[in-house]
Image (cartoon, rainbow, N blue to C red; front, side):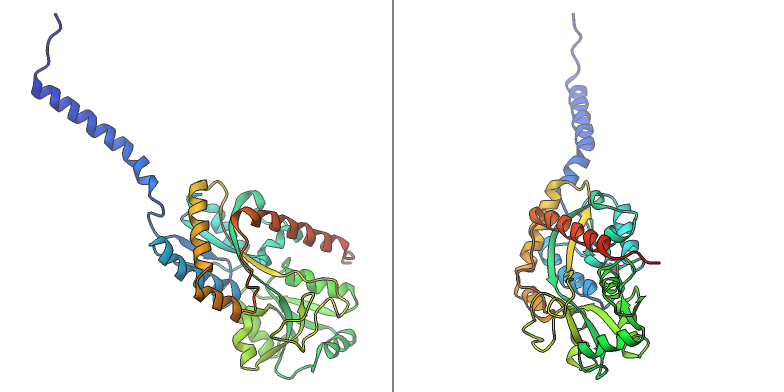
Length: 323
């Protein structure tokens, strides 16, 4: 005959089993809540530049959407690749995001960074704007004067880093007969100071990065890398009308590490879409001279990125080899 267990002991055993099951199930339940802690927002550039400005604007808006802190962490170096390495080293859990500027993205076409397309997942492209070549104050009245000077002697142009769209554009123009020397600066403020201090002759910059300096007349664009003139700068010629078949628009995407849970990717992408739909962000785009249709969804951004990468590789391949 089977011995019956005392009711008290039976209750104790069942309670213990229930406790153990709940204990082991707790991590699964805990993982269901996302985000459960602050989301680190990596900016692979120093403070003050366009990527930093964009990230800080979005971080403020995302905190309202996600109900957690979104601290911005600047990690400059290596044309943005130091910050990209930090993202790739973090867990693929959605608690680390980064802003990928096309300055860094272009290095996939020009160099061999320690990351590739398979290492990242775009949440969305959040800003698209043209770049230009700027001069300080009243130096050089127009682009024709810059061209004449660059054919007579070498001109120094401040860029974000080797392998960037800045570098590609400078080398393209060198192949067209301009004597340019690219000088890289990892920190945006150093680039601007180099131009204003007379240490370089030209600055390559997206339009939104130097709004304050342009408004204060410290610097001004002499050539915009675009197919048509900007409404805000009707007197400034474009690269295409000036005979240079290159535009390389600046885009910035928000990315996570590849392998992040698709549900978390979707949640973050949706939060970003709500953030860029706000009046604050639309005003930011306008002040940056960016396209009001800058948004490219998670679904479509990967396709655009691959096209841009193919285009940059084609430009690099078409240029004469350096001696």
